[in-house]
View 1 (tube, rainbow, N blue to C red):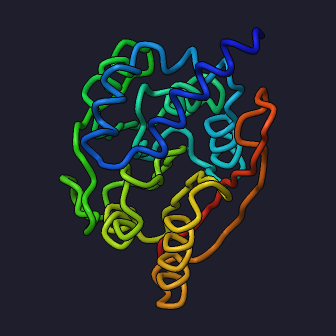
View 2 (cartoon, rainbow, N blue to C red):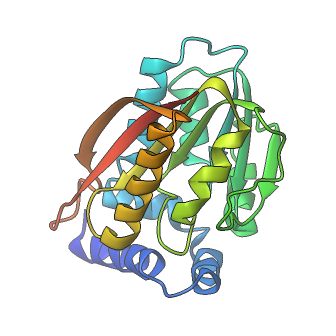
Length: 221
């Protein structure tokens, strides 16, 4: 892989991750949507493969469960669920970018609902409570993407006993990341969530300056 390709793709990622507002974030995704999948391949992203590994490890019913891909973008994780995990149940995707969702709609992954919605601070989603057996979210918990505080509302759409599977950077988003961890710890201390499992991995395998990410699994109580 040419170093120039990696440098260019990484520059786009940094512009998106470290943008200054949600409006800037959405503008970047509008430009990036058609190139997103290719850039993830160039960088060697691990998020979507790791979350599917965790899904396959913990989810026993691949036929009857309902799953929401939260912040699902172009549908890479959803596609991996279908094609690599063999998931045959109901699969919805939600993202703030209609342009990213359009790319997801072009994939042959049998999405039940494609939902364009920007998650706000309170995390209230345009969905019924206890609607999903599993929420997956790959690489979406970032500054000016999905607010750290939104986790308190997001969990309401997970069925009791259902799972929340997320990937997040363990470095580079310190302030946001620290607040998100505090929020999850609060939910666990209040016995609304329970830690189940996690794995750590290299976020982008093909870049020189590597940094860690993690895939975390929680159960809604």
